[in-house]
Length: 448
Image (cartoon, rainbow, N blue to C red; front, side):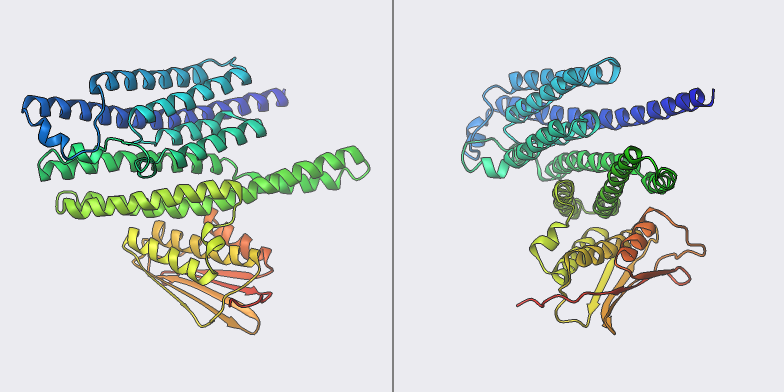
């Protein structure tokens, strides 16, 4: 009876998770539908106005090309978006859908997305994020998932307007926006940028939700250790337990890496959007600049997501030294969040082993994210120095602090990363919030 009751409870939990995932997917589908419709309708209406005012010649002199038939383009795009709605409904409501049929609908999604992007002359490629989110949700087979991920990444890289416009004549959304008065241009550009950013934010939030479902993996590891101790005499069961334990550790490692990247990016975007809302009526020009900066940060965040899935090492550390990578992260976060961040180190050459550099970079990233998101800090001070063969890392902010420090997802990850390097970390929330970490370092060779 207990087993049956537990099974029913688990089924209910799984159903709730499925509904939430479907809600995220539906929201992304709705945003993309609105974005595609906005572009098509805007191009069609603007074309009709140009014809009505008999100034087509003046407009044509200033553009590279125009869509052959804006009205037909609108009908085709809306029809293709309707096909995406249909495949979403089939996957969500057809409970008995087999894995092969699921893969088939996802292939249809990719083809439809490619067709819509082509019809829009590559002025919008956010639909590929929707296709990527569907892959995360529905594809379980490793080879199939890898295939879809490669398709999505390649498609996103290739379907870039700035790249393709070099090799082929494409119409530009900006040319049609410039047809209108200056005030109208500001609002039209802002609407277009907000829809692009909102799609990216929903995708990042969706990924965070998927990762947060793995929060229980640490408890699973402890349970596996307990079961392993009671199964010493059963060799087959022991081997099975070892395999499951390795899988759980890998999921936990993946959760830490992607949580750090997504949390940092999303915090900067959210803070920047708050600034946009405050500036919208006061300074549209400043709002546009802020949105352009947020768009750049969003794209960098997406690149980090792709790289995290494939390699889990921050891209900055692949291309830059540890110190330069940290300063780059500090500068970007200061720009998008209006928080003053100061980084100091008395070491001329910060060169460590890969696991040490990863841990230091991620701890600083998580410390900044927590200070901005939870501490509401205006200033953050980061110091990194060597004392008696150890690295002393201090992250201090002037935020609201915390009388009682709870072990949340972020602080838990900081502690785990430091302890994996046999270091220690303390937290102090009495005056702002301070993270102090002592890490015994295996000093590597210095840079040339």
